Image 1 (cartoon, rainbow, N blue to C red):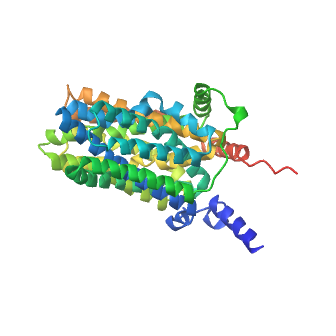
Image 2: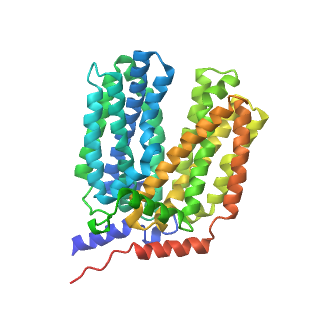
Image 3: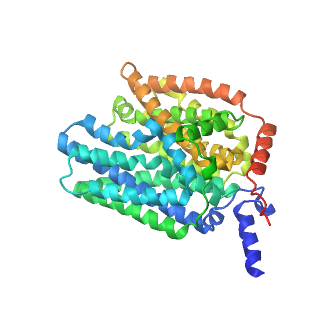
Length: 438
């Protein structure tokens, strides 16, 4: 009886339905109290840091072999190519099999592929093909991890868990690039071996720290991957709450990423060098980490939802003063503020999960992640092209002004609280486990 009572308590804590936590944000301690989340969190950090090691190493190896900045940049961009070429379709694979199994198999395969890249004397074309093959495994892995996280953490613990991953992700980016650069300066292939080791460690953590669960899609419900991907898109864009969430998430990424993408050129326009560029490039990640703490830990669930519209407007509004050609310190503060506003993605993600049918989680997350990656790339490329004809400050200012107009329209058409509550209740009923027969 004691064991059964503990299971009930654990289940109640996991879904965030206890009365004493319903009106306050979950704590970091409560989130880390979920054992499976600790393993998922550690797995994610290892993979992220290893990935940043590899990106620095690949760019260095290509540049040292060819002396071409363009080819070096292309090697860096290869890891994003699968998202652009067919991320949502690849992510649909994760729905066909248990999420944990998908993640472990992807990690094992990436361990082998990255280890092969570290073999001395690998030709450049083979290096790029191995990197591309490893990158193809990222969409199904990420989609499976996002869907599994929504099973491991429910209620407000999910939102706070996302905030923790946001903070860890930004920290891993800064540390990964910095330490990866130091390691690469000694031996780039050591950085690649460390990346392979990070995937192997991640697979072990998932194998022994996360319990098995059945696949979301049964064999009888399967169709072609294209059909399944299209079904996922229809679920998201045919829904009166998920559709606006997707559109504002894509738009927010397109707005706040532009100053970071143009940071080097903007620093040069301001008369600064590499240090100034580094300062500006750090502003968004730092702002994002601060915002994750503020939104995830210091706001109640209800307040987060209420403030979504304010954050959507604040992101572009804080960057509009670029039209006044501000000095470096002001630009840093503008980008810092935009980074904080950009963490509106966290409560948007939490709301998205609440209204999403569980059978479509991996496909829906894959669609969202792919859309944000594509939007990211298109926005930076378009802004970079405009910066060839105009000053960076002018481009950022006008881009943000257009973004503000777009967000104003989105905010005026944002679903009402009644609509959101109705769809949350509908999804909760749809996702309720069927009663056991017999």
